[in-house]
Image 1 (cartoon, helix red, strand yellow):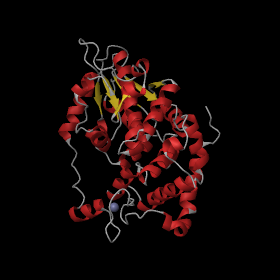
Image 2 (cartoon, rainbow, N blue to C red):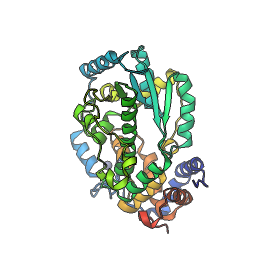
Image 3 (tube, rainbow, N blue to C red):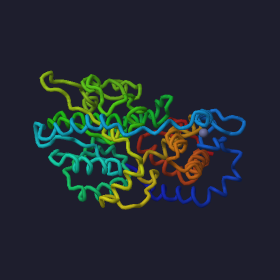
Image 4 (tube, rainbow, N blue to C red):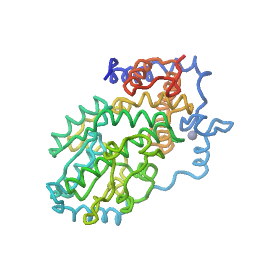
Length: 382
Ligand SMILES: [Zn+2]
């Protein structure tokens, strides 16, 4: 397991450079960069820019305005509260709800709010460690779990399994890039691990902290609960790729097998943030107020998946921009993220994907861990 380069140090150097040096340097390398929307920072490779340098999404939004802010849907919230309330004490074993827990602010908020609203709910928190967790994410877990005072388990599938998953998905990117292929499959497997654990421990509810946007755009349905029919089905593919092409029979059993016992219905999968639909700021304020997470800004570049730099570089070579940019550009358009900061980050990623500045040793290390070469994933540093 080669890990010669410290990923956190690299991430911090990357951030420092983006903030302090890049604002100057970008003026000298500008001709090497793609044009970007003057309103949301979207690359011309992502969306068409007009003569004024405004992308098609911003043009549309300028004409129509932002969609009106939804009022809190109280009926939906009540429906959710009813389902959770009736699960209290209903588990066949020691627990009533299995909560997907990353140690980040969304899942921390979720656990504390469920504890407040449903004090008799017997909670088991669970973290799926894909072998590429950032050390910062791990230390966040160690810090916040004692404060939440809940039972917690790690699910750690064998390393070879994850190496296969990441290796194969990275070499077979769909139109949504590494975000919609590698990261998406990782998320699907995380949910499948929870489905298996909950079924085995007779836990009736699985609770996950995805936002309304993630549910609608990632999972593709419009409710706080995953459709029952979908939950009863065994999984045969992920991100459009057949599991049979990726894994042997034994490995496929780590994925969700669907309803195997006709007598016992499968666990229900709930996404409470879909119904609560809170602002980022409110979640942040609450977890600080509850004394669970310190009020500091942790950049996603430091806390995320260790593979993120590699995924970004592969995307830039294949598509001209990173597939993770879509979501940030959307947040910028909605006034939820700062354009200059993120545009500089994207631009520098674009630049360093060719030059290798800071990221090359890390990217080479990650490729080595996945038993891949730069040629395998179409990356060529200058
Ligand atoms: Zn735009």
